[in-house]
Length: 622
Image (cartoon, rainbow, N blue to C red; front, side, top):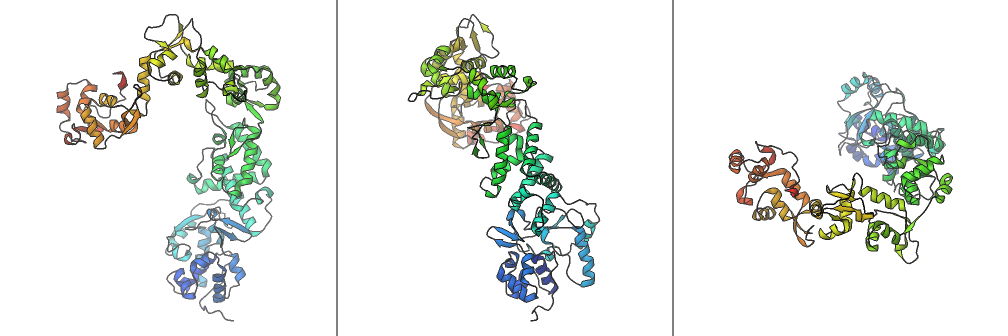
């Protein structure tokens, strides 16, 4: 039977169906591929999606076997697509951007001069985002066009008028060998042996993504951002990653171990698996709900558990660690309640840690759990909470409060079945807690009369004991003294007034008194600024009086204070007479007029006298 379409030509062996239809449309004088398909009794989108009914009609129209059309189609299968024997994720496809090999396109244009067919034509492989190199010419693919909503997949229409651009690109030195990953993908699509059994068990998208992530970790580093990498960088990453992954799980685990050994930790050494394995770890974590990555996640999780000091209680790729293989000094100290410094000395004496451990942070000095188990158990000791309160010189309730806020950690939790207070604590932990509070302070025998022990100072400042301890731990108090003749918390003296003002400064809200003081205005002006929404008010606990009052949100206040300034504030902080400041700024146009806020406020950066101010001294101290 003669096909009804007279003006036609054969589908190329490596051509995609959308490209062929696009060329047929031009050859038959249709405006677009969509119009051509509608005239023929089917839709272009159905052909793009490889719908069987549409391909059957196209076969009858052109005389091309349906089997050939199916091989050249990306056939929709739910949210994925089928190409040859493989199921492709939509993330693996280029749906709007058109990439071509300039040499292939040049050859097509030259051949079209003899055959009269529209040229160039789109290769099926060019639709895959992982294919970045022409396997025939060993040239990098270039993006030549990007389809709009009405022209997507209309290959010939998108390339109309771009012949000169293609010929010019063909002259550029873009030679590049196909990557190991590109050859692997082509082998899988064509059913050839790949020599990579571990990758073959993965979905094709999972295999390509794993290779690129692994390669980016090696070539760029843990902080690599996949979306920021160029096509050339992704090509190199895919080549390196696939070369490694072809060796299977063992080869990948060896590389991950090497990455961990070579990782340059920050001085405090606080990075965990996300910091060490960066882009690979984070991408697998974000793909937690994608089951196709489960084998990769399991493999990476097992390897991390075998080389890093993680154990029960730690979460790796959203899964809890069941068994600890390695301890760090930090994790062992946390588990046993031993002081890290003492634990380091014990382990070094037993030869369980590396000889050059002295300059390495605690959490990076590791040892095998089984080899150190007997040693750690032989050096454990603990005391109950009742003994802790005697050691600290506090009441039982205060000692329990200190433990609940994490300043000292119990070595053995819940020793009693019914009483939470029967936790056991390490004396070394308690010593470390006291050392942190007294760090850098020389003991003295005479204390100022305005200073009081922590417990008494908390009562005078109308706050709780924990507030004072936090201020001391964070080095926010300037007046701290250690009595040489006292022990525990009773030996640490602070100024209650300074405690009160520091709590006022660190609050989530700014009191009206503080706002007036900082802005150099009266209460009426502050109220006007709140009424006109320049400042946002809220109900909050007063840090000194401890009652609920109307305050100003700190973020709102700081934003206003960094943006606007009044003449009164300028005079106050520049130590100039108000009249002199007023004459200097009266020519400036107010940002907030007096009739709005009962005082003129100016753009701080526009003031000619002081411009953007330097950081002020603490307003509370005035």
